[in-house]
Length: 262
Image (cartoon, rainbow, N blue to C red; front, top):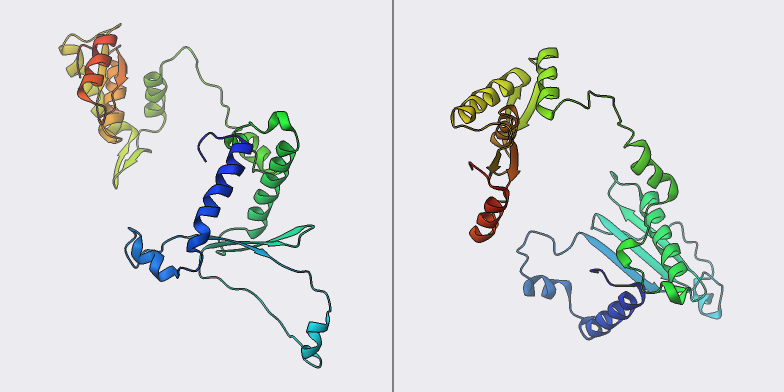
């Protein structure tokens, strides 16, 4: 999708689907062989089925069904998510089949919200350049739940204290409680604090103090948390470096912040 507008997105999608029409009769097995996806991995895990349908109306063509009683009929799919759109010409219907762990009603609500927002924008020429990424898909009730209810986590804390000092308060309150879990390794507050203190004393011995910058170039790990706490305990500020950055970029960042240690 990128950051395309509504009108550009519609035109681009139409052009792409038009190009794909020449392959519409290609079997799925051929598509799997031509892809880079190796069996038994599935080629895709969701399916969008758009079909032109007719509403159930009795016609002469139905005469062959005289005397036949249809007990039940249902579509089935082997994919975790299948969304079928039945286009009736003057309206359409959405049918969702999903894994039991997912609510089909929620998926339909997402689609309905997205379509309502899309058609609203498409109907206003000045809004057709609105980014597709800005379109709402969450219904109002779920949006409120996600953005407000689940984020109601405000808690009062001593704002004059640093992160490491608030951490030390937790060490004093519950030293044996689990503070960090990584790669099946667990550290209690007391253990994490001890590691950070040892490293902080080492940094202080190296001359690190208030106003200094110390760079960290570590992957997400227990060591990264220990290093950050230790730097703060020594009175310095930590500067995170991304390990995948080119050396020249890392060197420029180090020079810019004047880091004394890495």
